[in-house]
Amino acid sequence: MTCEEARESLMLLSYGELTFDQEETLELHLAECPSCAAERLRMERLEEMLALGEAEPPPGLLARCRRDLAVKIEDENRPMRRFSPRRLWRDWFVYTPLWLRPVGAMLMLAIGFVGAQFVPAGSLAGLGGGAAAEPVMSRVRFVSPDESGRVRVVMEETRQREFTGYMNDHRIRQALLAAASDPADPGLRVESMELLKNQGQQDDVKQALLNALRADVNSGVRLKALEGLKPYSREPEVRTVLAQVLLNDDNPGVRTQAIDLLIQSNEPEVAGILQQLLEREDNSYVRTRSQRALAEMKASVGTF
Image (cartoon, rainbow, N blue to C red; front, top):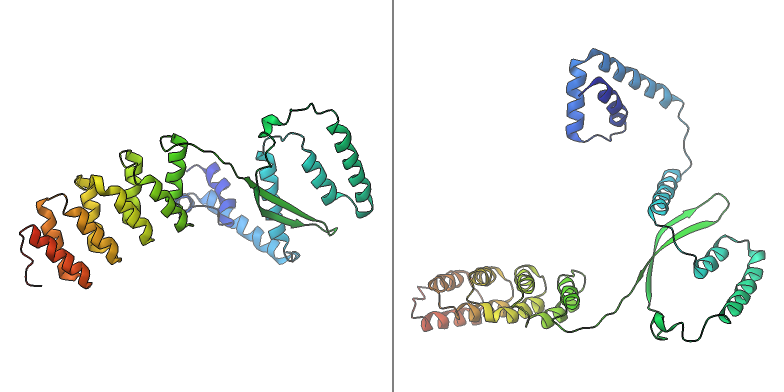
């Protein structure tokens, strides 16, 4: 680290803005450079003097400054928007004094009435064939009062979009895959798995089924994933996940279904997995199903 870099970092150090590695590098430089160490002492004394005369800021000032900065940054990064009558209407009622609002309302209505006379018939067909506007989900992003008593509110709006297609449509499959991993809605995950379970020949769908079987907290979703994996129970990756589920899943129904899929493969390691299960299984039905499966495989159930 050079002396110039060290002196630039001293201010960041005083505000706690350096990472651990950056701070350690700076400390090593200060230990070896008397000039920079003296600069650090000078800055510390200056901060102590300033602290003696520090004024108490008004309550909430820091929070308001942070909100205003965040809004300003968002406005700077947002591309220039087209003229919007709806936004003009909204801004009029937010920022206009109360006594002028009725005048503005009448003016807006007049503009809308006159403008409608010049819209060619059928020109709205491209906006959805006369269908109602799509619903918009909104939430408040920032609120910021000022000294005059006005309150600035920034809304974040998300417009819903609808599309239809068959299961071989890439958009439909990707949407279902996203819904199948939505942690907030188990019902949506179950419905998505129901639609995806017959599409396991697609690699991305098969991986989604395996991930759901391994990790989804909802047993209904895991059972749907098991249904979708039935045709692939002989594949090594699927057998590995089935073995993990059989030994670790907390739902007896899921464990029973995993047994049924595992024994379809007729692989030698299946008997060992079932024997491990019997050492820890406390559900009588699952134990009986495991013992019957071992008997069908002509494998020993051991002394359990």
